[in-house]
Length: 286
Length: 278
Image (cartoon, chains in turn purple, green):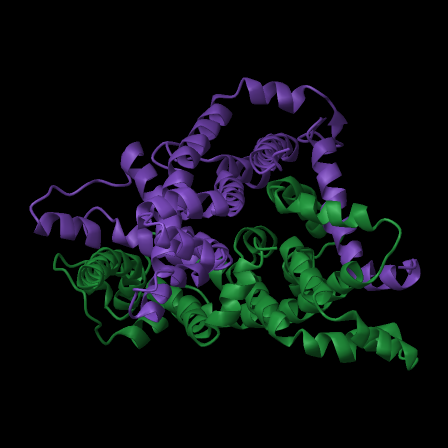
């Protein structure tokens, strides 16, 4: 094929222009800003100012701990649930498939603000439907938002509700791309459905599961709206504060852009590490 | 034979016994959103369990409008999402077309950049983006600020590249032999052929713009310039606020999207699944 540089770049120009201005420059910019003291006018170069503060800041380690804690629980629970949803939705025995698909996929279109409002009201101490239902079956009500553990649980439940179906859609498409004759051969050889799942479905689905897990980890790592709106700015007492929320407070409440950029690059470092693990997990076996 | 079909029946019953409660739990928050939006505030704060709709939806819309200009914010959200979707579909498919159909210097770099940004946290660009748009360009609280920076997206371009590269090349070559210009081939041959993929892309992009929260929260924080999610978000956590109103707002944000989802489920699913399946 001959080279068509001029034509190709004419088609790419608007896209690359937006990329350069609003992504490429900011990616470099954040890095540079993280080495500056930004609360003096003008900003001055101070390489250890923000990074030095970061490694000694209990608020940062609290946010990091909370973020990793949510990650470690929420992502595996959600991916498992998404696999179960996808496999069962794919079953030829399923009736009223459309209704089930609607139930699991509908949260995909619900905005963060709308669902945060609903979850906040549902888990309200005095008037929330969850506590009313707990009471009606004789269980004590739970003060969801005044204690760290239940507040964390609400965040994890909310995020899982919102995103499990999204992952199930991706996994379902993956399942449907597995050739049927593999299963037919296994059934002829009297391999049980459960064994087929563990020895055929899971291995063939692995790259897609890893892809879903990586996107989910990177999404959850930036968690902002849920602790911002559901648990009221990371409450109780910073118990649900995440890195995303800390970045927002430092960058846009205290207008400390340098420190916020250092937090952002910490998140990027984690993301790069996770992507490398993904590449290693899905590498072609030689 | 009969034992096999009875085990099939057993499996089918077990499947539905497991999946039905799970589906009901999954629908519950959406159902409660609708119920709350139809209840007067004193109903929401009553000790009884209410699981069926009442008749106060319009009162709640009025309450919401009293707390914040939500109808105005909806107007902004709709205009922004429509404009964004149109521009983004155009930009994304042009870039996808170039990557799918031409050989050019630096192609590998462009593809690597796009792939790299998929796993890059948005947090890394947020602060310089904000400083640039608000301070350097002085565009805070404008539509341009809401529409232009999010125009870069990576999954959409990969989706369109794949769509265009699956089309038979002879078709375009035939047009070239006739002397048709490249941009006309793109506009009048390739784009019409890609209509189902464009629909899937448009739905996903519209939804992303409609629900976008963090960027509009930061850049358009002036009352008259807020999008609907941002306007609704300002009410959550206030003490003297109508919760029925907030729920009515949540319903106005969500139900139109649910209707679109039901009508165009095939495109929706295709658009989301395309991210992972190569």
